[in-house]
Image (tube, rainbow, N blue to C red; front, side, top):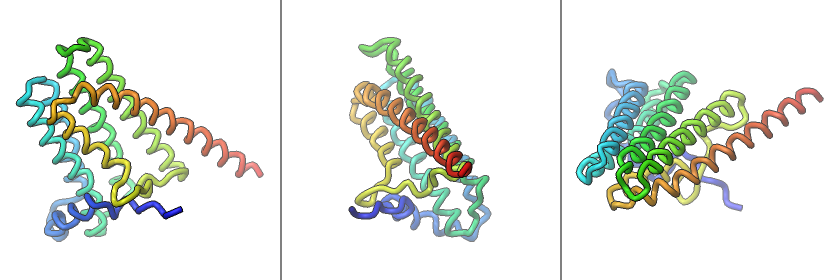
Length: 210
């Protein structure tokens, strides 16, 4: 079976790599970009929550920028030699919070849709599951059970690139359908990560006892 592509060499990473190169010898640090990623993620969520067609388009644009910044902070860290465990953890926290609040914002913005308050509930569930999944990944990373930087992917894409479908779907006017699908996917993903953490941590303890 072909080896999974290392996540740092995806198409999006290659594009962003060129963009951050001028920042290498400047006062801009990876954490600055991570903070901007978090702020733009929250900004996109707020725009989605307004619930108008115009605000959704603005939110889609801001979210796309936020997702690009998610790649940019790591690229700047590698190119400038400013990688650190603290920065890596901050990056994961910002990713989880940004993705989580975006789905919550979408749910709030769809509260007057056909689903009514169920859309709000789906947004909260999806956002909560997204944050929980990221926290579980962080836990596995901390325990050395799964290196989140090496989750890999295929054909030049990694699993995180799927988030780029969110602003596209919202811009195309299928936010409601997106939220329904995402609610199922996010909950399943969080449960899978929980099972993996339980199994791998249990295996690690058993191996240590022997």
